[in-house]
Image (cartoon, rainbow, N blue to C red; front, top):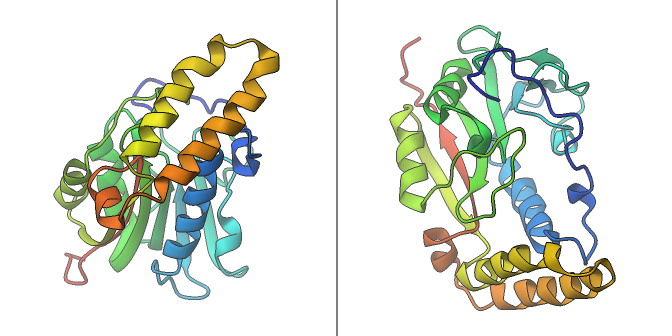
Length: 240
């Protein structure tokens, strides 16, 4: 998603991360993120047959978390074969105001050219009382898809979401500082290693990431997280 003219979906994006093996670069992150998105999805509270927007849907990895008869609208850039709705060139959604019960945004915000526009759109299309589940990076290596623009502190992300008009209902960090530091060291070194060494190196580093993550209390992760996830609500009294 970008403000540039006619942005296109990147068909060559990596697809193995969602089924990451123990030696994958992001094995622990993938496992933790999927678990937390799964748990937080229950707090979106859409009606059983409600309307949900997956805003920047990629390959719709979380469709299974919602009722089969939900009106699940998968929105992404032109060229994504999984999208049921293609975004406008400026990243906005070609849908009416207040037309969704819930919005899902997973690891998208860091890739949009203007986060304020993106969050304002999520607010616009939600019905009053509707909720958004959003996750994005705190501290992480550069990963263009098609580009990578932003990182947040815990306070900065909540401020941006509130500025768009939302009330933050729940906020949590995923993966603490020590494992994040190990992750960054891993990402700085692995590509320099001979190919035969990479797999055992990643096995060891991801094991360390997993073990040291246990040293952090959740309050520490909430303050300094590798990834942040939140539930935000459009006030029920919002103008209709």
